[in-house]
Image (cartoon, rainbow, N blue to C red; front, top):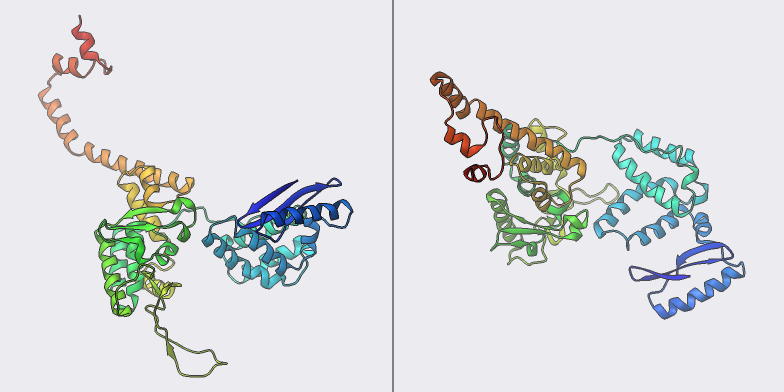
Length: 410
């Protein structure tokens, strides 16, 4: 038997009569956990306690999902937990109060069909089924549907990189209208720091070092622990930060507070129409710097469309920035220290980019200085001096360390 601690809560994990039991003790106190564990062992030995998996199977899906998400909160980062909770909403709506034990492969496949009919991407559906898979594994029932519920095929590309003229046009279009200022500044930061949209939205003024001209991406605002990093600001990113600071002073009417968000909630939004069941005049959204901005999606889509780049995702700006880093022949370590978590597939992709950049650089030599030297050598029909051979290696083309020193000994 054993007591396990997940976050602040204690769990019991023991075996009685050949059956394993693993469940929460619903307490944070270690002494109380010991007492409750003894009671559970006594009940299990007397046959009065069903295994945790059997209890979980009898729950309605909504209640089982709540327990699953509560347990996951202690295992994953806060942002990952929020993302998983959002992806779980369609599952909750579809399965409702259906008992976990009544979920079959046909119900899962019907869920997938309905999501596809709504135009949901395969990546999103796979994320939702992943939550369902982990929940059913806890109930010891996933093996009953696993053979019929395979993951949907996903796109294998790692992102889209812009041509130089496309990047210039995109930024010019974004500067045309004042209402696109927030989307333009966010795009500028993404293109010059490799930051994700969620990292930009979670940026606070405490994360900006005005003396060192750096920004800190914290663990709470990124996907993984590897996302925590310090990013120097180049001239374009620094100009965007200064513009955001001036805008924040105009909106806030006071000095910036360290806990305020760089992109506050409600900033840049126009009047909001009330729902039909609540008649009344339109109301304006007042910026709230204590809360992060939810999205700049509408403005971004308009910018991309007018720039002739319909379908360009905001996340593609991160891929473009990493592509430009790779084209500067930056090492994998340098790219990861700036961009944070980068998948092996993405690194392999950028390795090819670096190889292409090297090849172009060497190809330029063949049409430049090296071509002139070759023509001159041919026209003069000159031979290489013995001193040059002696210094650089043998006349057979070999090159050996300390060759000059070895020959000097004879």
